[in-house]
Image (cartoon, rainbow, N blue to C red; front, top):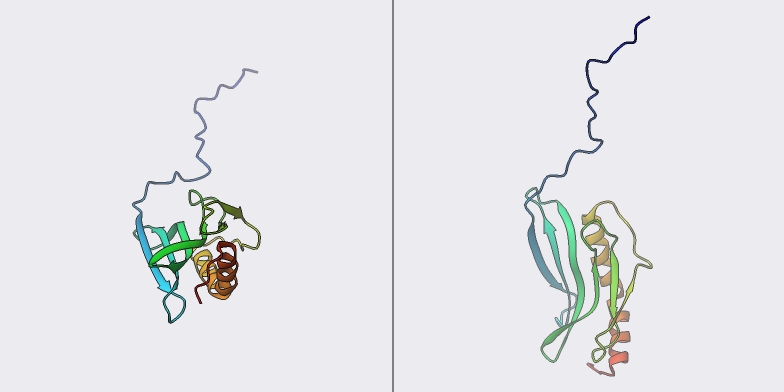
Length: 141
């Protein structure tokens, strides 16, 4: 019996569709946390043309000290595919910060992560503020 020779090649299809380069634009906003307008949350995110959130660049809790906004806690994810993590500033004089992922919920949707971070800051901003001011030895009250 003669050996069969294959006359066609198998077409191997890629498992994933290639990601097309999409046009992203930056959305920035901030909102105050109290009526004195000395505390605020500011954020910067990247969205596509369909208004879908693609990357969280920065979400930060800031306080106004002598007319200058200083960040205390900020959240970001590196590259849009990394996990969300927190940077906590030690004090006003010491510019170093502590990076942590402890206590951060993970969601598949970046919009849910943005909402969770804003609500988490709104819930804990008084505790964060008092710790930071105590470390900086500043009395704003």
